[in-house]
Length: 299
Image (cartoon, rainbow, N blue to C red; front, side):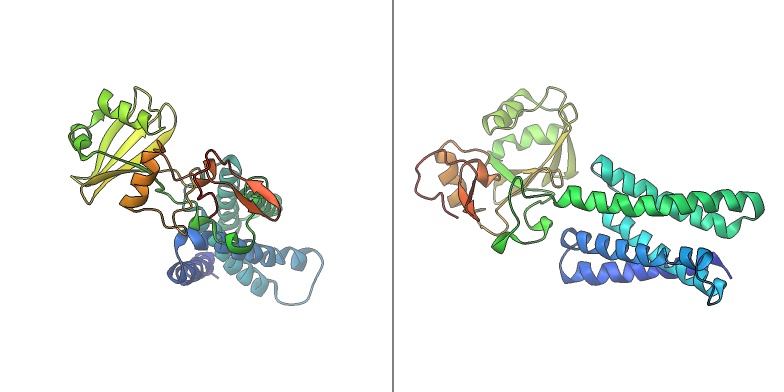
């Protein structure tokens, strides 16, 4: 029995499952679903331990075959969910443990005698730890109650509000020359970002993503990245950090020149974080700050 064949079946199955959910919505919305399915499948795959320790019925090789398929399926879903880009320590922990589980599992199938026993023990120890870290990672990512409860109309996928390129503000097309020059950011452009509530370090650099249309502003000192886009003779600045920036603009459509002008006329340069100014009440609890009586604090 070739273990790589069983593993390949699991990986192909994970790709097909991922495509099904991604095509129905988007990758951002499908990630959480993929992680839940992967965790459940890993739990089912762990049933192979019962066959070797407690239950004696059934052919052991058949159990092993399905264990390899299910384990590789679950691990592949977890890895696809991560997009190979863990963001925080508990994401990295789950990512590394998934790789170690996959590696030790393959090693057990390919080695013999003493080496196999050592790898098997490592595999048996790592498997339950991985399940615990997946649960921890899920709880850490979804503990939203202290900031904003995901209830009623806000019970939506994370990707609806947490976007990889949330609109921050717009700047004058005049600065296209500074962007095209690349290298260390100019003082004029650095000053313009500061006027819109975004302070950049002197080490900030600019690189071209798409010539004449998209630029990447990298502030390595503050560990921040921004994308500048040219559209309709305007330059728009977007946050480029997944989950660290949020926007209400996906559902509450304010991304128009009229709304931009209305905000900027009040001196509001960075208006993707709506709760900084607009107060709302959910389940009897107030969220956000009402900074002025402008008459549109209710969403």
